[in-house]
Every structure is written in structure tokens, then in C-alpha cells.
Image (cartoon, rainbow, N blue to C red; front, side):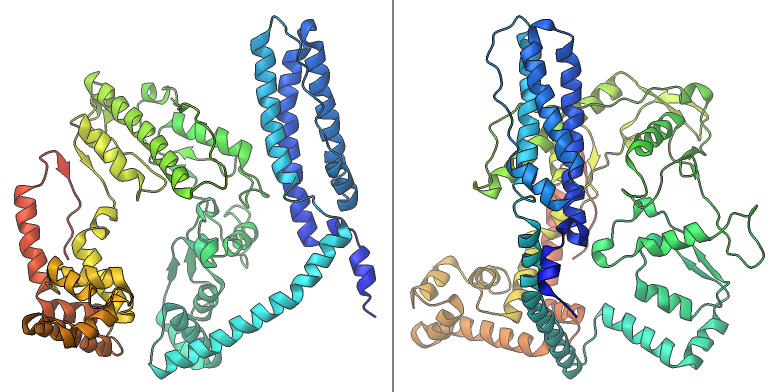
Length: 545
């Protein structure tokens, strides 16, 4: 018999949620202990800093006590709410630099620890369990809402004969599982099935590919270390299960599946690979990264470089921007964005100057085609960025400032162009015309051809209403010429809104191009721009509208 009282009294550390939260606290406390132990070691060497050493020692004792309590939620909670850093001594000493450094590290530990304790260890086990039970009714309603929405969404799609990519996957799977003759047909058809980027496969794809295979004709290539699509329902565990169960050729029995390890790297030099292995050997494990990064997983040299080329040292440059006042959580997020941009500019300046110095100093690189060393050229250099949308234009500009040729492989500038934004705005008002900014954007463009004075006149018809309704009212109160222009624009908009119900998106866009002549307008202007405005030292990605 279920007893809610017993469940509420259970230690929250025994629940999946409690275990995850306590693990997060443990990782923070462990990091804090490591930071303070380094400071303690330095302070212990100086007799004059005894009071400061004892203060750090007191902090470490409390942290060790908290860490040891993390197997029990109630015990950890009790220690956390009573956790208090003792006051930092104010004694003046000769080693002020060391004292200030110790205080700086301690302040950072206090800030980090306080933040995580105030977020996690804020209630007893019973209160935490009660929160979970209280959430059940809310989550149940959310579940029902999602299921109801899914059914209604499916019904609406069927009415319009619409399917999305996910639907196609599930329809295919349903056919293959329920109609064995269809699956058998494909099993006989395919001699081999090759799957790339297998670490990013999901369960639906796995079932589809298994259904059309003969079990012994699937070849999969993947690297779980490159799995980045869990948010898209990718399941790297599919890869890991096979990686752990498949056998190498020398150990494989006839009935077992074969594992071939592609451990050689043909892109990098030995020094780069050694440093990469050293780094990931220390941070990647089964727990963090789903795989143990050991000798079995090391990147091994596959490229053929001269021996002298292998002994180069790895160079790491760490930029420490001038510290500014911290932005509080209450301040506008735009300030944080601005701060990030400033850091990117600093990095971009450094990289641009570094490249210029390497070019000017005639830095030597190995040319495989000529089998000899030669001077570094700009085309030998690639700048790798985690994200290009914001950073690429900044790097591009800094390189241009030093008269260095640059090609930025980024679609951001193209998508932000006025031609693309105009069509995007038109698609928005076809979906919903009660959007003032997209509506005025289209009206003011070569598609609508309304002048600023005409837009003002329409706006003044009713200052309180939305712009679309002002258009409707302006048909009755403006002069004949403007009235005709408004009617033509609204007629086109009505026509496109009807056509979007049965035309595919690409067909609708092309229809708009044909109806408005906008495609030819953009082509004409693009030719003029590239003939007259393109900077000589900029190589840009060619795009066609």
C-alpha cells in the first residue's frame, strides 16, 4: 500500500534528482578545495602569514566536512545553512602580494560556493520531496496538453495533406515494421548499408536501418567524442553499445561483429596530437564524455612530416582582458552581449597581428607538393571559430585593417541582406499581416513601392490602429492614385495568402518573384554592386538570390 508520508520522509539523496543535485555540489566543493589547498601551501611557508594560513585551514575543514556529508541530503542541508566563512584577518604584513592573492582566491571560492548552495541546498528532504509531488499534478496537465496538441496538430496536417520530416521517418518505420514484404524487398535490394556520423543517429533511424538490413551488411562510421546533437534526440549510446560489444579482428569470433578502429590522424603534426591527447586524457572519462580517453582512444600520427617538423612546441596564447565591473543579473542582457563582442574584438586583433608578424618574418611551412619548406602564405592559414555569426565579421574586419586578404565562410551577411530580409518580411505578413514592421518593410521596398510620404499619410488615417487596418481604411479616404496602389498591394497579398495554402514554400517564393519582378530587380542591383563596390582585398562567398 502506498504511503505518502513514508515517501516524504525518505532522504532526498536517494532520489534521482537528489543524486544529480548533490553531485553538482560535490564537483563545486572539490574544485574549491583544490583552489584553497594551493593557497594554503603558499601561506604555510611564511611564518608572518600564520593567521591567514589558519583562516584558509578553517575554510578547508568546513569544505571537507560539507563534502563528506553529501551522501545524505538532510546532513548536507544542515551543514550548508550553517556554513560561514570566518572573517579575513586585517593584519599588515610584509608579503602583501601573497596575502592579497590568497584573499582574491578565497573571495572567488566564497562567491562560487554561496551561489551553488543558495541554489540547491535550500530546503530539507521532506520539503524537496513535497516539491516533487506537488509538481506531479502540474506536469500531468502539461503532458495532457502536449498529447492533445499533438493529436490536433496531426489532424490539421492531414486536412492540408502536409507532412514534415519527422512524419516521414515515422511513416517509413510504420510501413517497414507492419508490412514485412516491404522490408524484405529493401533487404534484397541493398548489398551494403553505409552510415556516416553514426554517433548522431536516433532511435527511429536505427530501427529503419535495421529493418532494411540483413543484419550483416551494415557498415557504420562514427566518433562519440564528436556527438553534439543530443538536443535533437541523437543517441550516442547506440554507437557506444556497439563500440563496446563489437570485437577487433584479432579477438573476433565468427558469429561476432567486427570493430575497426580508425585511430590515425592525417591532418595534424605530432606535437598537436600529443598536446590534444594530454589534454583530453585528463578531462574526458566515461562519466564526462561517455568514453574513457586512454591509449585506445589516442589520436596517432598518420601524416608524413619531416622529423624536424615534429619537434616544434605547441604555442598557447591566453588573453586576459582588462577587468571591468561585473554586470549584475538585473542589468540589461545587451550589456553582456556588448562585453562578449569586446572580448572577440580583442582576440581578433591579436590573431590578425599574429598572422601579420608570421607573414613578415617569413615563417617556414612544409609544402607536401614540393617536398620542401617555403615561406608562409595567407592561403595556408585558417581561423577556426566555435560560432561564426558574430565573430566572423569582427575577425574579417581586423584582418582587412592590416591589408590581409580574407574569406569568411559565413552566411550571416547574406541572410542579413536587405533583399533576403524583404522576402522574409513578406512571408511573415502572408502568414499574419497584423505585423507593422514587416508590413511597412515590404510596402517601402521595390515590391510595394510606397513612398515615405504615402506611408505617413496612411498612418495618419488612424494613429491608434495597426498598420494593416489603416491600409483598409485608407482605401476609402485617400486620393485616387494612392487608393489604387493600396488596392493592388492588398490584392496581391490576398492572392499570396491563398496560394500559400497549397504551394510548397520554394514554389510560393518563386511565384512572388515572378509576380513582382523582384528577382530581376535584385540581380540587376547585385551586378552593379559587385562591379562598383567590392573591396579589392575581400573575397566573399558567392550567393545567388
